[in-house]
Image (cartoon, rainbow, N blue to C red; front, side):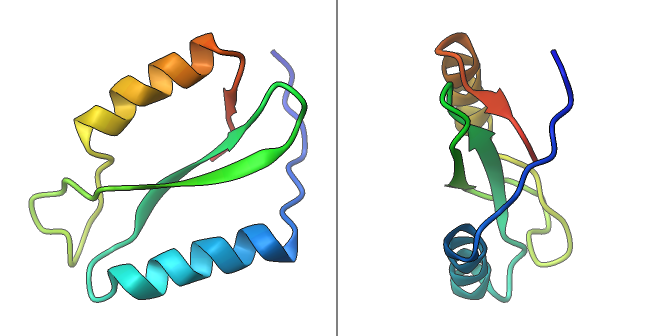
Amino acid sequence: MTNALLVMDASLLSQMHAYAVAAYPEEACGLVLVDPHGEPTVVPCRNAAEDPRHSYAVAPDYLQRLGAWLRAGYRLAA
């Protein structure tokens, strides 16, 4: 696997910002995946942290889905 620079366009940044604003005052939590064609996508996740106002943890069900995405050819960018 090679490390590649991920260029995030304004649309992706806007999606991340909107999700963070909606999650406030809790910490936003999510993944950035890159599909097999090289297109990035934002996947908002439920924050399962014990204290979601001060920390974050991707909920286990999203980690299970991540495994399926990786097997389907996606890669985790962030």
